Image (cartoon, rainbow, N blue to C red; front, side):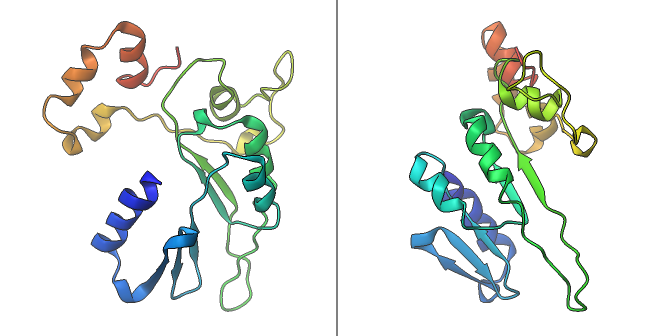
Length: 173
């Protein structure tokens, strides 16, 4: 709900004219004049996961992926099946799964899948067949310092070692 109530609404208000989109609050969906949509949803229960099976998406973004079950994410991957064409009928869309996460244990499936590019369900972990299609970016608060309140980085730097390594330096420990 935070992304819906805060981040997305602020972005739309600040960056996109209200005439260009419609907010469908009860469905947590934004529909744009060109037909594009943004849908927000959770994967808290089996019912929500099963409901997703009837949909297709071009892009799926997993916010704070370390909090999700890998099995749920693999179901989401099967929904990256939307075919998008331009006005001439040429296929233009590229299906993508995007995830963000605060680092946790190096044994977390997010580290194994997205960074190490190995299947977290195999022992020993086997390289992903499509590992060449993966990319990961590493950001820390230092990269966003201009948007943070004064003293925030110093506050993180004063945390105990493990939390400092994770939250300030972005290390999986």
